[in-house]
Length: 186
Image (cartoon, rainbow, N blue to C red; front, side, top):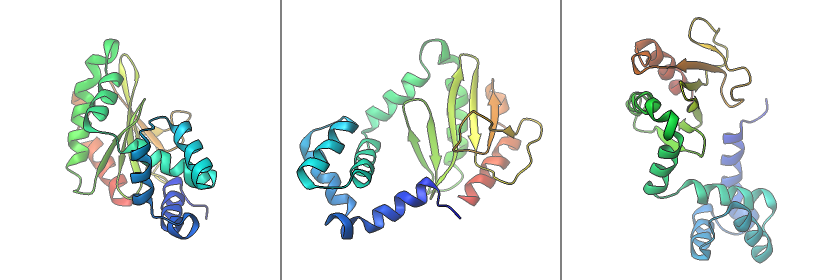
């Protein structure tokens, strides 16, 4: 059975000391000292200066950029819910509050266009898709789509299902049950 992207990344991190001479934490310190903040620059620097293969350099760059400061994280979320999408922020806040209560190991990871909810692997993601709708992707492989829980289709390949949310009241017990199931499987 093929590994998920998260499992492949964890395998690479485990093999990093043997393959590159240093564990991830040391590489992150090295990248911090360079002051570089663009993915391509970090990858190029690691490959050129240290002879690291592209896959490891790419992973180190991703990990470095993902650990951004809390102000960077706030800026990412603010940008997603700015202007015409500002009215959707209460939906995001309600979903994030619900997800945060699923367990102490929940990781909330904002990206440029969405926010990923992770445990050992991603179990859900949320995205302000239009000015009127937030899409919540949930990883529930094998569950039949029904009612509000629809197949993800072309929405996002990292999740199996999608729930369209247009108002805060739709963040309810039914949604929590789906999120809890996805969290427990992650």
